Length: 46
Image (cartoon, rainbow, N blue to C red; front, side, top):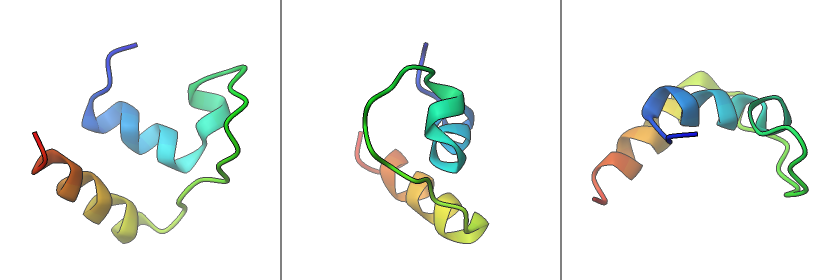
């Protein structure tokens, strides 16, 4: 899998559906605006 903003968005909504078999405990980020803000912030770090 190549991590893109779209894939990250799907992962942040439902990690186990995006990466089946993952054992990482993360319930997801359901708030649309907070998720978009997080992705926007992460794109500034490269």
